[in-house]
Image (cartoon, rainbow, N blue to C red; front, side, top):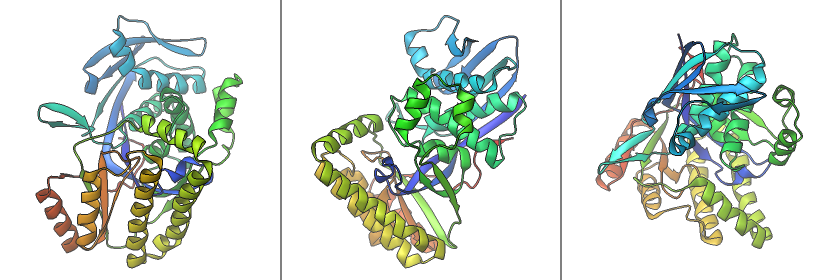
Amino acid sequence: MMKISAPGKLFLSGEWGVLEIGNPGIVTAVNKRVWVDIEDAPEISVSVDDFAIRDARGEFRDGRFGWSGELTDEQKGKLKLCGGAIEAALSYLGEYRAFRIRSWGEMSQLEVSGEMKKIGFGSSAASVVAFVSGVLKHNGMDVETRESRDVIYKLSTIAHYFAQGKVGSAFDVAASTYGGVFVYKRFDPKWLVSQIESGRPIREIVEQDWPGFEVEKLEIPAGLELLVGWTKGSASTSAMIKQMNGFSEQNPEEYKRLFDQIANLVGELIPVWKSGDRKGILEHLKKNEDYLRELGEKSGVNIETPELRKLSEIANQDGGAGKLSGAGGGDCGIAVCFGPEVAERIRQDWSESGLYIVDAMMDNQGVKAE
């Protein structure tokens, strides 16, 4: 039996702006992982502990993967991403060995007042990456070289992007694949859709250079501490993106100004980050939050909630830089600071204000075989 895991994600700088081709974002993987174990079996069988689904049987025929056992519509919906990941991986491989695969998440959800809540670490993307990697590894492919991770990223992006309704930048897929901190530029979505719809084989699509796509690894500046606070609420990222698309269509010039503003800031932050300029890093991250707040106010999209605003202001007052992470609307916010004393002060004040402190840190490793 083989065991594979993929980390979660957090956005450090450049949210929303990264949706436009050529705009950079700074992303980190975090040490909250999704795991799969996989072994030989007479037929394809899938178990997902997080959904209490055991031994769902599937078939791969004529380039398509489908469920052959008795599953409810609700169960099929929960397994949509897993099925898409298996289909992408098997389409790439062509010939394959059947398998039994099981997955489980590490803190992808928390119990709050008797209800399970997602905390916004990108568990769906990490799950897709883990499934794709597990199937490839089971069939003899290394999953930890840069070349193989490029394949994993592309297959996982195809599965995740189309299952999510063709929205999103796939930065979460990149974090789960490559790990560490990196500059990310998204692929050209129109190009990818045209490639898939043309009927070209998945292997041919994956083996091409994808227009727009870039990942550049960054070192973590000495002394930098990343804190994660959870607001105990969340929003639908895909719904927020659709709302933002409406704003773009109605106000194209203002949309471009706001997105360029964010992208230009990240462009300035990258050399500051590389130089380890502590003051410059904090100043740029604070300005990033200001720009995201303006984007939310102008677009009408609920990006910075009152809880995220409170999280940010506390971090700033305590000597760090606080901001939302990701699309906003709830989920997690972050604080970047330098020095354990500042970090402890932020943690204490966050906790006293009712925010949930998440035990998470940057993870330099991407997808890996255990």
